[in-house]
Amino acid sequence: MPLVSRIILVDDHSAVRAGYKRFIESESDLIVVGEAGNADQAFGLLKTEACDGMVLDISMPGQSGLELIKRLRLKWPQLALIVLSMHDSPVVAAKALEQGARAYVTKSSEPEELIQGIRMALSGQTFVSSDVQSQGVLTGTRPLAEREKQQLCEETQDPTAPQTGGLTPREVDVVRLLVEGHTIEQVGVNLGISGKTVSNNLSQVRQKLGIHTDFELAFWAWSQGFGKKPPGFGE
Image (cartoon, rainbow, N blue to C red; front, side, top):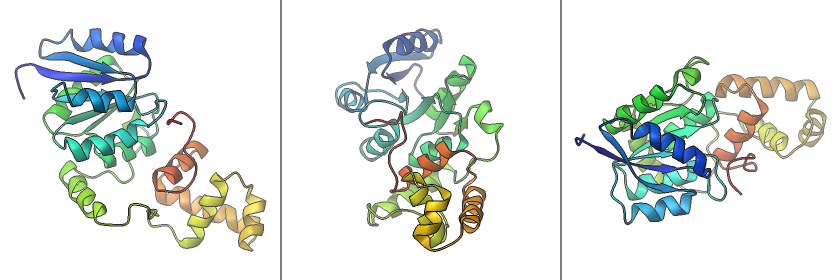
């Protein structure tokens, strides 16, 4: 790492950026060289402002931070990406890491954890804040080199094809209908099975994916290519 690492902050709330900027710059080896309020601003800023790392929220108006991560990984693969999010869900954290982030820190974490995450990301290591780790193993996370290799493989595949995470076709149908707003009973009618069978399928889905809440289910469905974008992840 250089003696002083240059950081760009991306968050749609200027007061949040100001607070974290002061904290980051209290460290002698870190300096904030730019700020952006949304994904497009961040992408444009990187074209004119050299930096070593980017601290970004994933819940922003317009393009979400997760989608921005994918763009950044293709254009600047060596850039250290540190997610700073209100979401403490391991499912959300795992997806951010799979997309190419090196660190995931929640806004409810101790500020020192953000600094630790930034420094580990800058050195090429993976970091997840303790409040997310305490909820269990992050489903689907892999070492950075493996994720980069997998990303290259995925780029040769049909980008519109949903990734089903090992679910059976029926389980995928159950998830798809549920996130569209259908009730358990309505899903059963649509698929020609009983409500009890739908509930059993849903339990199997949650177990396979490590999902515990309806938000996580909706988030997973959207991130895999089906289902609407959950509230707070852009328009």
